[in-house]
Length: 630
Image 1 (tube, one colour):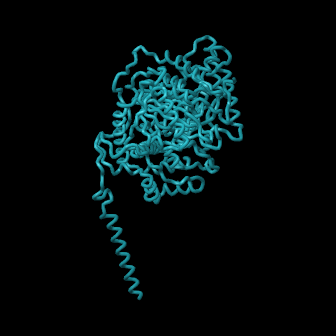
Image 2: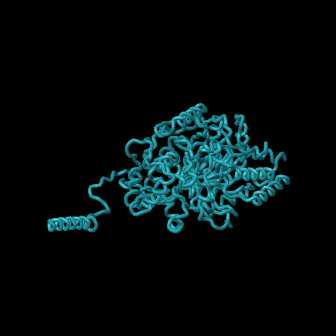
Image 3: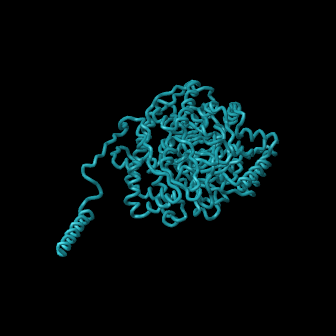
């Protein structure tokens, strides 16, 4: 009997050894015969268009469950079994099995295809005062957030000075820090810096030698952007250990324009999420001023009435952390469309230190004051448009009807390969962030938030093949958009999140006209004080759970729904503008998004001005500070 048992054991061991030998040294694992690779011909859409991207599957993780998942995801078991399973379930491997004919486009830098038809003598700085007057006259609400125009009137009349505004801001920041429920919008500020800039601006107004329309206007910049003398942390507790000694190009332009930089704003760690949840010691989670029990939404965790992102390369990114360089565009969050146009005019333009924008055409506001929209064709993919919460859909449909009433015609379009765009967008963002953060992921792993570690663990499984296929898909999508923009002037969807792809922003509110300057998207965190940021997504900002404040959270499904409408612009580099058009039943802002062809930002401002007339009533946030003191 003993001999039979020994023989059986020896036989089992031999079979197991042969199986392991076959699997380890004989069987091919670099590919498999008879695998189907559907061929996608250049310029030809695969199947029917217009189908919205699939919803992701992943449980919401926080507290112990998040800790356990993060630990496992970074082990051999996690990298060989758990993470690949998550990637397959969420279709992140979809592009691996497609044969795409296009060459990859690694950076969506586009050369202007045709000369603008506006007069060469056009000066955007001559148009801006007229634009602000129109915007000011169109306000119909009993309550309104103050715009640049309101500040300028007070400064020019002497009713209020920039120095008084600066003191009000400092008092507000101190009050928030003492609050039992701080909103945590501004994470770094310096009293002396603020007062010095405000005193200089006050002197210029007294001598009537102002520098620009932004002179004396309070602004802040996302922590991802270099601002002297603050730490360039990008939402982490390990970057930027020393104060900055050199401004980013965007910061320098704002200083030269006379703006009062009040500090740097909070953000999701490294911009790698879309809630603004950041439990590390330097930041904390930014809260929504309309409902402090909800997240602000977006990696930027900020707020604004108008979220504007120009054509890729329009604004210099020099001095920003290159977290996801091919999907990020720097843009303003502001109180109004006119204020966004002011920031655009000052920030846009070539920078020798930023090669992607050197070939750009001159910034233009041509046609922005046209009284109607009679010559415009608005493209809407209604199947994609409806892939959002019911109350967001109802409000946005009314906004489209309003634009039709101003003479615009709505053209049904079909946006192709939306699922492939979703996957390509995720691959580009996570691969580029994983590359930039390679030293940090190795040497500062324990100092990263749990959600960051999980996302980078997933990013570790993307391959060079995935990244190249994603950029081939980018080429296809850009070609489809060129064809589409030959028939329509713009595309309209419910709002997005700056993003990183942003999505996307709600935050600490006061009467500051410009909320902040932020990279979009994936990033994209916090700002100072302004109008409610639109609900820039297919869903409204989620509620904060108690455990989120301690460990952070991971909610892949909500993250991808948040990014649903901003992925197209992020991936292809087309300009976009997000405008608030109403409120949800819980009082959170709802927005609509306009996307135009490359370099046609003026069209966005033209339509945005009209949408401000649709959004007639501005709700006052639950937590609000009157910085102008009126």
